[in-house]
Image 1: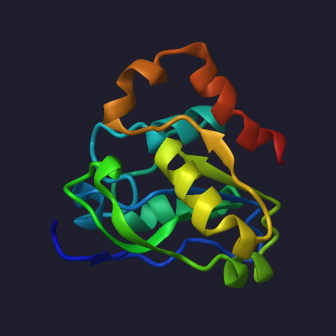
Image 2: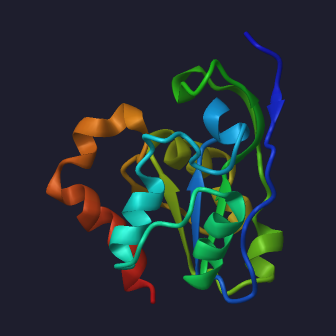
Length: 164
């Protein structure tokens, strides 16, 4: 097993953030760039479809602004873990992030988790500390291509809009 890796990015949020979206842990492509940095990950395209706008430019600042302008917040469930590549099924020794500091400084009223592993980890390691459960969303990862073509994919992601 590789050595533990610490999450490279701080959370993205501000006082107006109403929805927190969490992945499990950044992939190698994301760690080298920014959240959801793999070019085939549908995260940014999915959000732009939901909000009926153009996707952000690929640079981190444009993506950060995209999140904040829509009163969203973005982070991951885990602070650190051992993981092989981007394979969530290999996660070992997970250390969760703490969510109360973000929740106390924002208007977050719903937490969504991007994918089954993020949902499982949040429910097991974070829900009690956060004071709420997360809402499952199907993964935007390239590994979930089949699931992204189903009508329920956008229907489930559309729950985010219902918060506003």
